[in-house]
Length: 104
Picture 1 (cartoon, rainbow, N blue to C red):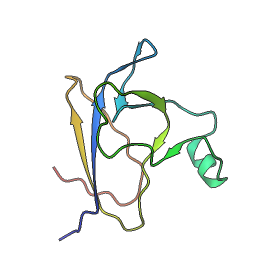
Picture 2: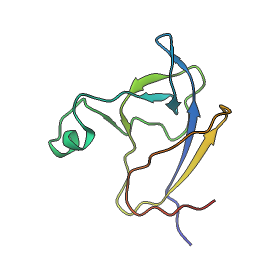
Picture 3: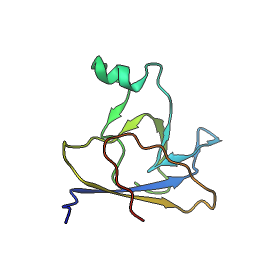
Picture 4: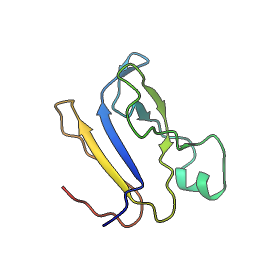
């Protein structure tokens, strides 16, 4: 038995942000920063990405913004990640991390 320490509900949506349709996860649509994320992390640069700024579940249908959100995780934590898509289109996902086990 694995003790799941956190559950993430990643809800894909297609909100209008600044008059343009964007695709978002939990209300955050990815906006690539000028500095690559791994360089910003290595050199401890502030303001490039929001560590822990992606909520564990959607905030609501009316909330959407642009940003570079990164999910913070504890060492040896076990996450249950639920992908939810109500948009009627196929979503592709890119998940970076260590030691993934896909079930389902």
